[in-house]
Each structure stands twice: as C-alpha cells, then as structure tokens.
Image (tube, rainbow, N blue to C red; front, top):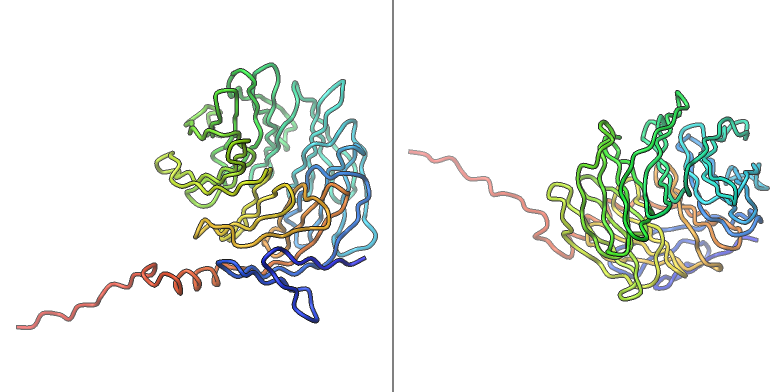
Length: 357
C-alpha cells in the first residue's frame, strides 16, 4: 500500500504527495513508496553508486542482507549470513556486511550482480562500524573488545587484512568511522568513561595524527569540505551536532537538538544533513545550523541512506520497511533564503573610479 506522510510543520498538497516545510528553509521532499522487506528490524541501509540505485539492507534478527532495485516489485534477493548483520556499506559493485554470532565476527563481500558472497574476512573482535575508501579499494571495520578499540583495514583487491590500534580505555568503544573524500584521512569516533574524542588517522602512515575532544558519546560523523559534523547523544541534553573546523581542530559551534539521535548522513551538495532520531528524521541546514524540517513515519526510523546524487532518500524502519523519497536539490534555495534574511551575507566590494589628474 502506498502511504503518504506529512511531517510535522508540513502540509500535504492536494493532488500529490509533495511535502513543503514551514521552517527556516524550504525542504521539498516527495514520498514515492514504502517498500516492504518483511524480514524484521532493519539495522543498516546503504545504496550503490551505480547509475541505477541498488539498495542493500541489513536484516538484524533474520541474519541476512536484502538487495533490491527500489523501482521493482517485489523485493529482490536475500543473502544469508552467519550471524546478526549489524552494518553494511557498498562500493561500485560490492556490498560489505559485518555480522556477529556467539562464535565469531566477520565481514563478507557480496557481489551486487550475482548476489553471492565472494569473500569473507574473520574479525578478531566485535565489529561496531564500517566505512570504505572513495575508490572502494579499502574497507575499514571498527572493532571493540576488552577496553580496546582498533580498526581493521581490508585491502579489497589483494584481499589482505591488517589492523590499526587506536587505543585503550575503560569501557572504550568505537561507534562511527568515516573516510574523507580524498581517501587520505580516516575519522574514528571513540568514547570511553571519561568522554568522547574524534580521532584522525593518516591512511598513509596508519598513525593517529590528531585527537579532538568532543565530550558526549559520539553516534555518527559526517564530512563537508574542511568541516566535520559530529552527532552526540547523552541523557543530560539529548542529541547535539558539533561542528569541528579541521584547520584548527576545534569545536566551533554546537546545536542542541534533544531527542535520542543515532545517525547523521550528509547530502552530496553538503547543504543539508539527515539525522535519525527516536521517532523522526530531522533535516539540518548546514548553512544556518538549524533544523529546518522533520519527517515522521508510520514506524520508527532506524537508519537512512542517500542515492549517489542525493536525489533519493531511503529511510528504513524497525518494522522491516524502507521509505523512498525523492529530494530536490536545495543549495540554490538555501543561498537565496540566506540572502533574503541576511543581505549582508553577500558582500560586493565597491569599484572605485580611477584617479585623474
């Protein structure tokens, strides 16, 4: 059944399902359909960067991964794994899924065309996060065990594995990983009983370059130009987004959003970020650092992913469904809105007349 959703602060326009925000900036989102995977709660979702989206979801309780074309009916293939599938990422032609069982933890590579497992890499400890280099030649798995955190690097071409030790600490965990677009730096979110830190690792040397103290437990990381956005959540203030300037390695701004957010995903144009909260997906304008809209679903959202060009937003839920939205690019609208509300944001220098004798 096709379901039309009306987020808080929005109105459904007669005759279509376009959603228009009443917040600080327009957020044009159109719900296309809800896809029923039907294999229990979805723990993670990822989308291939190919011309036609392939959506990959991790069915935690079902110990499987489903791969499907969001435009096709019914849902496509399901690949069984030997444990609870806790995280998934995609490269051009492969999906990598991390799973855990009582006996072992591993990361398996799945060919997106044949829908078959083509390689499996055993992990020494529990996998808590996954990330891939922009060229897909390396996959990074965050590990946690016995107050130790580390990152396993999988060379996907040579199919070799090595481990980078990040550090030790009481109750230490590594909850998010991100590789910058240049592929030169790896960002790891580390939390222990003394607080949280963003650890920046050089890909070339595999050594820690910098450590930025954040404070509250980190839930996710997003990168935009020379800035890192860090999502945190604790019982005192709820959720918050911290802005870290990479030129100074300092937190320059913080937005308190409350709730219990778990995931942060940046749009390709870096104009907005999508935050998965307890009962909504909040839309953050990165220019104003304000929440400009919220999407409320029939079921609790569990995770989100964007298509490669940012025109499609996929929101998975705890009831085994995936909502597909089409998203209009907002960069031009956001700049127009910024100039309309703050004309001084655009400075045009005066052109002086030449001095004549």
